[in-house]
Length: 376
Image (cartoon, rainbow, N blue to C red; front, side, top):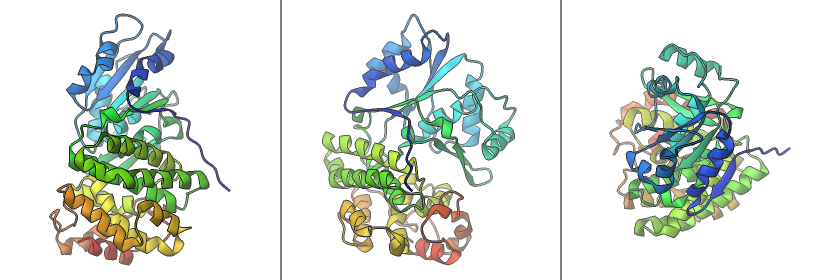
């Protein structure tokens, strides 16, 4: 039986950022609350829509916070919590890539809790002991890849003990998402390509996930086609390509918002943690070997291959490696500084609950090692 749910109000298209003031007014009006605005860079504060919000003289006050960390840690999240805990907030707006959006939505889960230290924060995340009075948030992505603006979980890293944590709550979908391709059209080429491939991974993994359904499959195929048809336009900085990446990333986010991801993401986490391989690069390197592993369990693989524009998993690998190479991105573990002797120690770290067990084929030490060897 198929079930699908996503409550996020979505506005997608060039210039849609202009809808932010009206959305905030509907959230904050007559509540006597203020707004926390988390942005990835000071330059966002110069945007005319944002500048007008910062200069508001009545109604609510906007408090800006620049957050520049990539792969946010529990330490980063705790610092933001401490910095903002005394503000009288009624909403949070995140403008940035997945890191900013993940911090914004995580903060909304714990804004009125009494968190004493980082260990306390860890326990709250592990036990999912989040606030009952969830604060609404609005997600505005400036990269086209994570889909975080339409999902209800956030990735928070814990480098001290080398684990990835998930802040997850069905109550933590955004109030609204504004997907404006103008905000992602100035991305450096390598980031634009790796972000787009992250979105492809979200859609592909959603398609074959155990939790997949007919709605998520349709969204996934649409996302894959949109991205793979237009991704080459990124290399000539074609705005139509940036528009397609933003749209495709949103569709992929809607797909995996209901299914989560699978083996590619599960195996990728230690690669990012140990070798600093950007997340989108790590998952894209794993797509082809995991496709081969899952092939016999994929429903209608021909439709998936057609959306990808390839005839089989080998051609898929060639296509991914070509895109990475053209964008001057390293495409093997050895190029990222791994030794072949590392693989044995990496294998047990590649099992992530909620991702590995969502893969249609059981992950074992043997097939994980084989996958890692294939991308070495």
